[in-house]
Amino acid sequence: MSLATRRGLLGATAAALAAPALIGCSRRDERTLQFWAMGREGEVAGELLKDFAREAPELHVHIEQLPWSAAHEKLLTAFAGDATPDLAQMGNTWLPEFAALGALEPLDDAVARSATLAPADYFAGIWDTNVIDGRLLGVPWYVDTRLLFYRRDLLARAGFDAPPRDWAEWLRMLHAIKQQVGADRYAVLLPLNEYDPLVALALQQDEPLLREGGRFGNFRGAGFRRTLEFYLDMYASRLAPPASNNEIANVWNEFGRGYFSFYITGPWNIGEFKRRLPAELQGAWMTAPLPGPQGPGASIAGGSSLAVFRRSPRKAQAWRLVEFLSRPSTQQRFRALTGNLPPRRSAWAEPALAADAHSAAFRDQLERVRAVPKVPEWERIATELRLVLERVVHGDLPAARAPDELDRRADALLDKRRWMLARQGAA
Image (tube, rainbow, N blue to C red; front, side, top):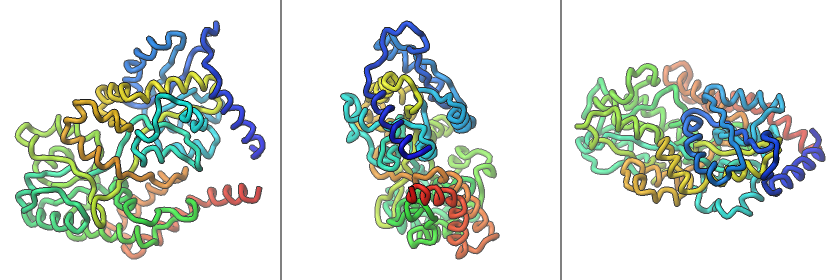
């Protein structure tokens, strides 16, 4: 598609977004919004939209529930077949890929006109994940990040009365716990089949993970090298087991029996630990923000967003639904149904959430979250990061060679991106 054609489409779609809703049209097809939602969110969306139906009885919303395992492929297939929905839930790491395809409608003007959305009310790092090449292409629906779950009773037994504030203090705690629990137990679980903990710690550095606008890997940079050295030391010192989640029969049971005392994971595990740990241990665990190199550290800005597709003939109606789903009151209802954390600060005033001690650390951490590199290839690069880490921990690759190997793999995955950007520059 030529640049002129693309600009023409952008202008046309922006005008469509600004147009009034098509209310009172006799054709059902013109009044039906296609909304694709994934996983548990797709299951509860119908309950949320009962109030929307009362507000907008002239509109009908068809919700298509997709399993997360198939959603990405189905969205790509729909784009290729000119069959995209009007609105969809999308993991925020998917946005760069669909932005590169030109599939999503920019929402900057719609937000500027909105009486419902207030960008300043959103956690800044989460909002930033939706801004691709200077354009807003999604609105955060719920948020996700990673932080520490820890056994505060075992930490106290090792001589500490508060969670760590920086890496040096955390290491002291881990070594003290290891001395307490012995050779057959560990201080922290860092599953080898997960790249999120390492990426979260790497985002705390000043240097980006990719350089030159996402054209090349930057794993040979000083920041990532510091992170990798710190991370690998936890395996080398026997503070973390060299295992994946698949090699641990039950993470919650092992946490309960003290096989490990720290675990970097996400908000979904608040409910899991409350359900799975016995009553006598419910007061023994807590959450805490991630420590950083010199103090409280950043973490991953994750979650899902609501995106409007450029090919939708019902953009104004789709935006009306986005506004409804973005209200603090709707987000509070959404959390009650799913346990998902809201992206707007004002929604955290809901009494049950405000009073939940285990969620408080997430509220704190969300003020310090950063987006992963906004390139379509990021998830494949992160998978290579996991594979290289596993090789190093198992002794199949010297640690000193890991940054070069990661840059080599990342650069190969980014080759097409460099070619496309070069062609755009030439045009």
